[in-house]
Length: 379
Image (tube, rainbow, N blue to C red; front, top):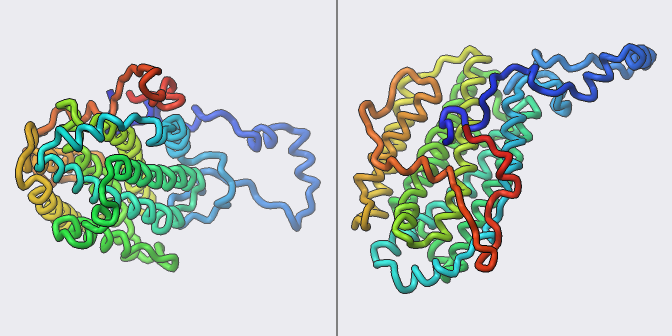
């Protein structure tokens, strides 16, 4: 099972576990070192000392990957590349039949509006990482994983589009719901406001106020947007899957959920690293406001998509699980207070969705396991 506090590895951050790089090997070779000494002084540069690297505001060469200061970031990248998949690998034929002949009116309402929210959210996530976060990083091992993350958000958007096209939904109507349905718009608007506040290339992170705002924004993105809203947002479709409905869509969301678990864990770790390196104390009122705003937006959204409960799933179930997951993310972030003390899991099966174990009939569909899934370590 996944370790939800550290989904990647069992090892510590000891850089001794990283194999020596070619550069390090060359520098350790006395003959090569002697050659380097012959390089004219005008073009010689001091070797990068990994201890001089910083997550932000670093002064080392951003183009030199190793030696690593953050080997855990490189491990995120290596693991992410083992998670290769595309939506074309999943057979959606049964979903078409289910949607047209088996889903109730209430279930169609849930399915369509979950897709409507997700289509917009993943594009927003892609833009945030690519334009607001990645350029602020001053260690390349961090940027490299985030480049992969940008690709994965685009892949997720393709997945939702593939579902919409396959089922035969009205694309214009589905994509525009976030603009005309207040309860969906509220979540998108809140995310846009919080994320856009740092989507500026001229932001000065040496300014303590700007730094604080950036960290709170990134905390919201990793802990709430991806860690709660996305993570909990797939569960209505998983509830249909558990009854044998819309299994192709749900299977694709399971792959996405694996990616999002990694995204949230990475972002949370980066936030904690910045707080440590910059000796930053976060405003507790700002954190409380973040949870309160997120909860109110989620509650409003939930009341809309589940205004009529479906078999085995209700608005109370959904919002209860949001509170439980929010407490988990607060613990991961190392916050001193849980946002919703005493909240208990209302979906004890949800964590299992990221631990797929499948056998495929090669005559019915293409293989859908990650290409190198056997190499994954989810402990």
